[in-house]
Amino acid sequence: MRGFAMTNVLALFLVTLVAGTGLAGYVCEYSNSEGTGNDATNRCVGIAILSEDNFVLTISRDDQMYYALCKWTDADSTTGRGNDVLQWFYQFDVVNLEKPLGAAADGYGYVYVANNDPNHNILVFDANGPDPVATPYRLQTTTDDTICSIDLDDVGHVYLCYCNADMDRVDIYPSIMDVSWVYHEGELLASVPLPDGIYYGMCVNDAGTEIYVSEYNSATITRYTGSVAQGYNLDSGFGLQLDSVATAIDVDNQGYLYVVSDHWRERTYDYSKFWVINLASGVATDKIDMYWEGGGDIYGASGTSAGYYSAIDLELDDGGNVYVLHDYAWAMEKWVGSPTTSVEAAQGTSQLPRQLVLSQNYPNPFNAATEIRYELPERRSVSLEIFNVTGQRVASLVKGEQSEGPHLVQWNAGNLPSGIYLVRLQADNEMATKKMALIR
Image (cartoon, helix red, strand yellow):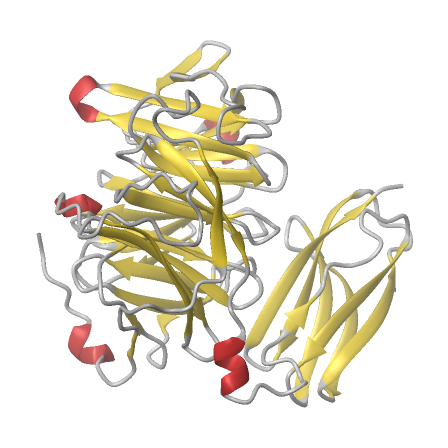
């Protein structure tokens, strides 16, 4: 395996997160591990969250050449499992599932699978029913490398990251609104080059302005900022150094990064944990030891954890629940809780928001009129704009300097047609977006 060339560049900027007892604001609510009769019955490697307790797992076992997709509906430790789906099959078009390492879900019940068939297709399934079914959408990518991670932004752009690639990078493809998905050959919108390394984890924020990647050998997480249209650059002022390897990452819209740390890939069977990191302060607010082989102890103040040390993927639902996937347990664990705030309180958190906050509009869905609320951590130059799903700006609500604290703006959609719209808040160099549904 190749080394990581970024270490010296980031040495001055890295926040080192040292292992220790740590704070733990999470407990394991349930696990569908082996012995429950509700496990994946094989090696599961990727998870896509549809909503709380509703998720799809990708199954990949090379030694038996078994590859599948399976959905759990209203899951708990013993119920919810659907049937394995082995193919993307639409009319006369068939693509077998082959080494599907990553999966992601949009807000409409569609699941995007990073398939590693000869054409490295992104396969789209409708997971609103009991089992995933193929949609008309699939896209042959331009790569010959193994796709390891996949994520989506709020506009629907598809982000791919590769492991053991000839050229390490994040590739970005258009949303399924683009006709190329029906014809299966899409244009690569942008590519973000990465230094040599082994990249198992990648995620993007909702606005598509921040891409996070985790390099396995150095246990380093870096951030690239920008946009699909303007390109991305390394954020040299950001860097996280874990005390152990990182296999998967996810970011929420409240300013926290979640990291699975594990030695599963090297088969050392050492430990299994996940971190919660405050991106504004660089503080690791929580370190949850799910399993430690040295003592055989299950942490997290819960006996419902699977007790395995093969964590390979991690995703959040909209409620902040954390779902951790264990390859060797054939299982998913659901951890409930919230980031511990005592670390921030000890550092003197003020009453003002510590970062830009854009709340969900209310009502939503709405008919003609809705309210948009947001908070500023300090006085800033602000723009608040509305876009349709094609990226066309349809309204400009705020432009100019505003004071710190909460703000409320009312928007009347006038004669605009029904559909999904995006509200984008930009304050200096920070940006946040939310989806809004207009129903006539």
